[in-house]
Image (cartoon, rainbow, N blue to C red; front, side, top):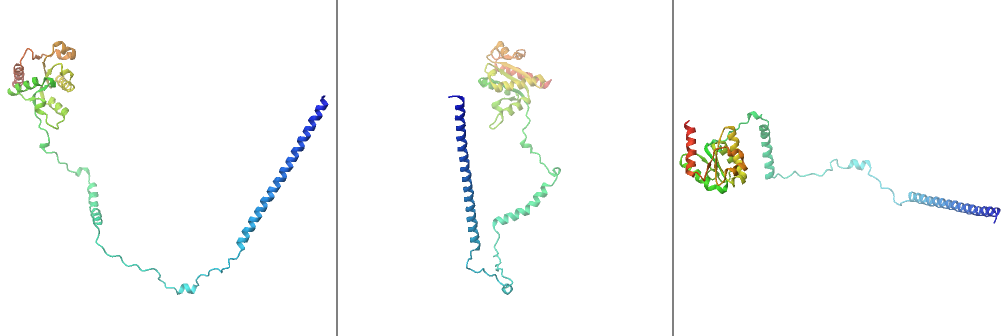
Length: 270
């Protein structure tokens, strides 16, 4: 087929498509008109139905209200009478409320007083702990209790005032507060140094307090070595090695107690 033939075919196809499109447009237009007409018809029917409902008679005359003469003929006081309430004794709750209402002004007046007018009573002397002084505070580990107990007995037999936990502490006491109180009021701090002592937390707490007061000059540290060598003490606390100590392996408890008591007496008489 040559070019003229193809051109003719294309023109025919285009003409056919154009005809189909015109027919479809005409059909849609006609359908649109029919739909609009149907909608208008429905609106007319609806409006007609509303008009009929408004103009339809009910068959009953309207109710007539009362005349002016009938209103004036009525009695002027038509309110129902109410009997007075019966008198009853007030309940307990009401009496409490009234009492509180009477007391409230007094409380407000008391609250408005200045703080300077409030009197404060000091605690009685019986509530204040006696400020007892001690000559010796003995610090030790629980494993060395027998040594500490024997030393305390030997010192007390010589008239020395000894702070020892089992002699001072009572049920309900605060351990830290009692230890601090004993350290603050003791002239000498006797420390039973042993391998167990350096492993105890409370023993280290007491040693820290004694060393602090010794450095401040308010207390003297008296170390006692018990089943421990100088090298072992130096490995745990080198500062304690320079302080002259007594060793339980070379001195008896009685000898140590006698020397401590003589030291206390020399300070008291010096």
